[in-house]
Amino acid sequence: MSFEKEIKDHYLNGDKKFLRHISVDCVIFGFHIGELKVLLVRARYAGKWALPGGFILKDEHMDLAAKRILKNRTGLDDIYLQQFHVFSDPGRSTKKINQQFLKNVGLKNDKSWMFERFITVGYSALVDFTKVTPVPDVISDACDWFGINDVPEMILDHSQIFKEALQNLRRQLNFHPVGFNLLPKKFTMPELQKLYETILDKKLDRRNFQRKILSTGIVTRLNEIRKDVAHKAPYFYKFDIRKYEKALKAGMGFEL
Amino acid sequence: MSFEKEIKDHYLNGDKKFLRHISVDCVIFGFHIGELKVLLVRARYAGKWALPGGFILKDEHMDLAAKRILKNRTGLDDIYLQQFHVFSDPGRSTKKINQQFLKNVGLKNDKSWMFERFITVGYSALVDFTKVTPVPDVISDACDWFGINDVPEMILDHSQIFKEALQNLRRQLNFHPVGFNLLPKKFTMPELQKLYETILDKKLDRRNFQRKILSTGIVTRLNEIRKDVAHKAPYFYKFDIRKYEKALKAGMGFEL
DNA sequence: TATTCAATGCGTTATTATGACACAATGTAA
DNA sequence: TTACATTGTGTCATAATAACGCATTGAATA
Image 1 (cartoon, rainbow over the protein chains, first blue to last red):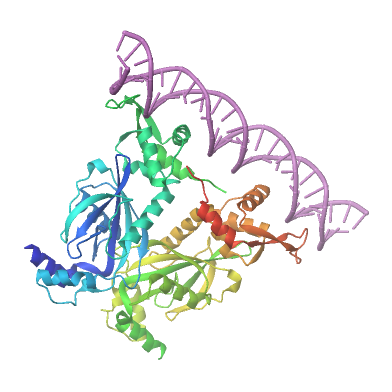
Image 2 (image 1 turned 135 degrees about the horizontal axis):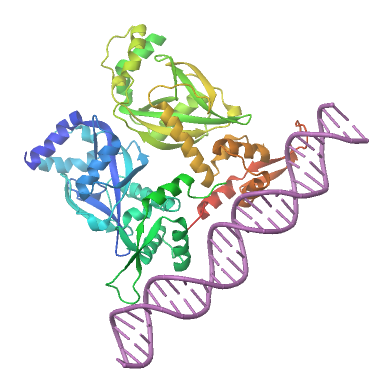
């Protein structure tokens, strides 16, 4: 099917495949060279950037829909992914944004299911930046990373969704070691610290940080040091998922 | 409109008023005589208990829908209310459960929007038990409190929704003083402790508890003691919402 | 080749938070 | 009057945290 046909079909008949009124939007975080980034797509119809999103198949679990979208954008399969908030402002509709675009594609009908109000579920994903190959979706002409302090204007309420995802990530970091999902399998202590500092947006004491992380027991030091670095070479560590799960059960965070 | 007509109309034409495929279910917590309780309704069509729920008007914010449902069930207006999770199992449908009921009401059409798959957003509410007058909704013949260790069998996945709400409440209790929403304006320290013990399901040390609560500064002692009690009379306290919000901003819970 | 220097590994100390427990005060009931 | 359950207040040992020192490493520089 040609691009135009595909689009047209989506607008006219998409509601036979997908649930109406409900969408999923993903805030995909990555970490690269000391910077926290988010993956965005540029929506053709708006010429603006947006969170990668999609719809839920009529017989599909929402979590799977999110997973599918992520797989398509990043190529990654086994991803840390969770819903964090539902956005349901009655004004959520791309009708106005869409119309010029549809004319361009040769579609005049403005009674598409796509123009109706949408409630969207925000999903937050943490991925290993180095393993991602950004791929735009059908209605986008670009897919790229942006530093979290450098996100462009976005369609609809996507800026707010992103903001909430970031807040959510910060909250979680204190109690769940979610940060590890953002790093490669092997990482150094300074890298891990930089990640924490970036997410929390504050400086941490190097020595206290190391002590705290090690005391949780969720990282194991490898008999290997980073070679290609100037100055003293740091050790590699790996995330010990079994100890992590044990710690989770015992209840990380403090108890009254 | 008669009851039968009202029901029939809801099944046949409800989708003109409400969004399809999306519902809201509320887990309403109350606290009474040292016991944590949840408010349930008994669905006529199933003869089983269920969480109070409802649908979202075509032009209504989801939070308002939840608020509306709560107002209708409890009579309360200003309520601590928040979404906690979306449940989207593709099998979520009351079709089978509904059918006998509809025959009874004289409705044969089984192509109702009500039979389609529903994604539901779970809302958690904390209310002052003493101020609630439970009111059943149209399709329910009862509305009552149940101890959280004593909930009956429920329709669909409502047991799971309830379970997640309880877990969520426990998690939150450590970092946000949500518990205060479950108590009357004036309360004693032993009452507050009992509430915490009930929610967390464990004993706490009386003296350490008091110290910790007071150290947060979110409660103020009143110059008043409980009179109608045997043995030593405890002081009354009140929740200081301004100090609470200040504490929240400063970030309750621990920082890395 | 020796020196500099940024970054890392490892450690110390003061302060604060927490958990476990003691004892006096209150007011009803025996 | 006494016993008793319950509350208010305090102490102490221990653990967790924050702040900081110093030696080590190894490429870059003199």
